Length: 87
Image 1 (cartoon, rainbow, N blue to C red):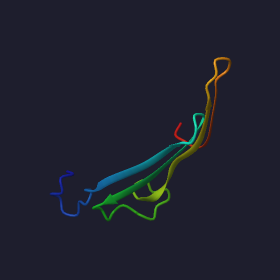
Image 2 (cartoon, one colour):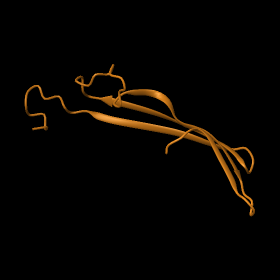
Image 3 (tube, one colour):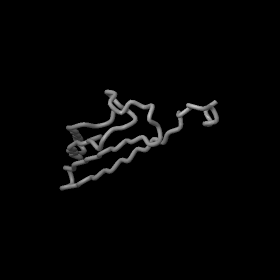
């Protein structure tokens, strides 16, 4: 049972994830994107907070951050993205 009625059952916890992002369009072909992420767990002492990697408790860090260059041309459009991104 996972309803907390069994003594010693402390498998109840709350996971939260917060992402904040910012995109900055400098000019038509150039932009920057930055996204930070904070993950946390509340309510369970059984989860090892010192585990590496710890998917339940992670301090605020860079999730994505990249530079975009997009040149729109009828002859040959070009797009370049450099940095850390989701694939």
